[in-house]
Amino acid sequence: MASATRELSEVAIDGDVAGPAPESGVRRICIGSYNIHSCVGLDRRCSPARIADVLKELACDIFALQDEVIGHIVSAL
Image 1 (tube, rainbow, N blue to C red):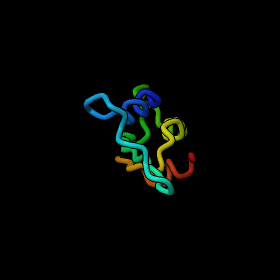
Image 2: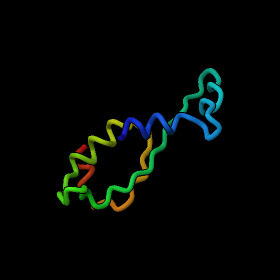
Image 3: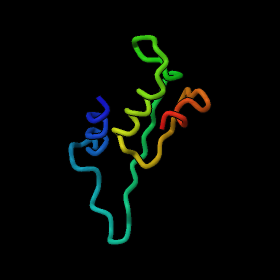
Image 4: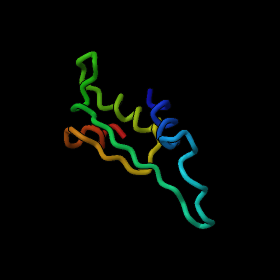
């Protein structure tokens, strides 16, 4: 699911590739937003490592995490 999210984020709404290539010397960044639901999955287990694996797969430069339990994700990375 995470890789599908990454692919969708690279496509503009009208179906074109997300914008023109950046100029020389300019780097695009990827920003992700993820609600981690206090690291509790559908199986009702708290698994910060599982959330960290999803974040690594998305490979964004910056993440905005919602519902983080302080220290859980940081220690899992």
